[in-house]
Image (cartoon, rainbow, N blue to C red; front, side, top):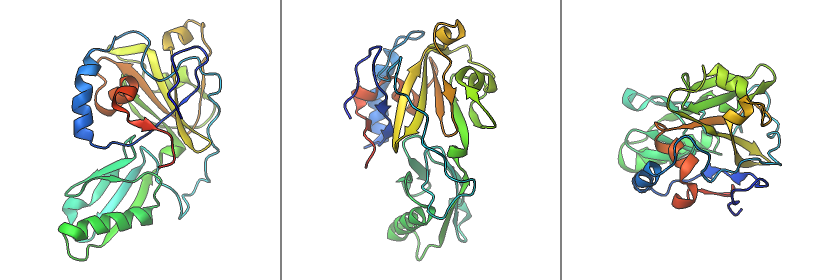
Length: 249
């Protein structure tokens, strides 16, 4: 899917991230991020999206055996009799989980059994003889909304009813002093693809723009001068770093 131009009729952009080399890409991003205009609209994520539909229907409450790991899920990984490698690990927005010894491992769209096998292979190749690995989903992001960036209380919040963007920002105790309220991104899975759209919080608060509905599984990121790392890259330098491309990897 090509990247849309910034216009009033722009469609949602595909948003499943794959890092070829995270350290190299972040180094490349540093100068570009410093050049961004704080407090203004901008970035590659389109505004005024006309077809930012409701997300795909969530799966049932209980996680099935074939549940596919999603970005921002929390996993519990246990390596038998190796406490240093065992614990809770978060899947980042790019779909990877970072583990001791083996580093970043692609987890998104794998079942826990498939990730178990992958980690076992990586540990057996260089580090352990016959490692006994088990993987479980401790918290699924598809059951909650996630708020990140320049807010006072970032984190995951359960969806218990109808929510709008302003209400979600309130759940996170509002934007902080470093926020750029003109650039708030919502990431959503629509028809099997990870999509994104940008919203101007100031215009919404003034009644000049519609307050969009937020659904379980949505990821909301508020831009700001102190937003760093993956979030800053996503909000400001997607075309420069060519990180995003259509779902279907």
